[in-house]
Length: 472
Image 1 (cartoon, rainbow, N blue to C red):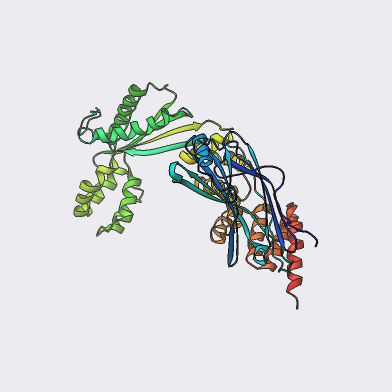
Image 2 (cartoon, one colour; image 1 turned 90 degrees about the horizontal axis):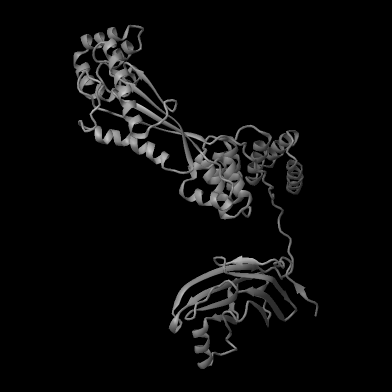
């Protein structure tokens, strides 16, 4: 009888499986009318089996309604190898090898062919065992899906070719911001580090600066402080207090870190009317509307404060006690630059521990070194869009990754922020095609093709064939 061969078999290049210490190559499966032939080259040179350990590899076939475990292969450390020799391990059930004595196992097996095997899955499991055959770990890997039966006609489906966009290089300059509520003695500008809640508030500033200054990958560009006073009292005195207290805080930071004068900058706001307006707007004060009208008027600051106090004394008393203390604050910002990363493995490491330090371009560069469509590849684009949620390129690339794994919900969300480039139009065409809206997809692909997306031509051909197939 003629030989029916597997059409999509592995090539000669080794395929690494199971935590990078077992690899297979030259995988081939074929059949005649009544026999199935399985051939695998298994590289075990990097398994690192210890003297009292053994590795058992078990190929198996699993199909609809049936399965078959194939003969096992054991690679044993020295002590386990001689133990099995003394105890006459059955050669029919398992092939025994001593670790170090063999690097490549040429696994060849012939079994009676049964029809359920046509579309079966060829798997391999790996068990690590210790003394007394105690299992220490087990892993499973899929080697190949068989396609040995008669070919049947299947409906045509749209097969997308995704277009990912390389982000433009940008400086990696970011800023960390915060607010500290430093307590000063009434009407004074001297800073006492142990006064009231100052230990905690000053620690907030130090912790922010230290988290950046102590990172070898980061260079501080500037530290800015802006002080605010509350509207209570005269505007002139509040200007004196805001300016003086901000300068005192600057000196405190300068003495701690010895920053250059050009790096540390300050500003001040005599009275934080914007903060007061924001609170009143969100409050349930009885005279909220009238107080807002006064705040937003063109009166001088002292006149505004007097008007609120005189017209609405109860509300003013509440503001004075509960709100004004929070308007006396010092906002700080630390601007910094992160160094560039060029090594893919380093980028992968940073992705896990501090993805905010990476640029879109670095994440894209790392993805290009991964297997397209793999979990690692898709996760990289998802991290990119989490770090840059409003960036059009990040959203378009994340949409492609989402559609590639069938996540149409997130793909739709990302596409809404992908911009209006021809490439974004092309990705929206893919979304429409995968959703079955071929008319919309055709229009979008035509627009993308006019915009210069070369892949749109093939997408159009597919859509037009699918539309023709729908015609009765």
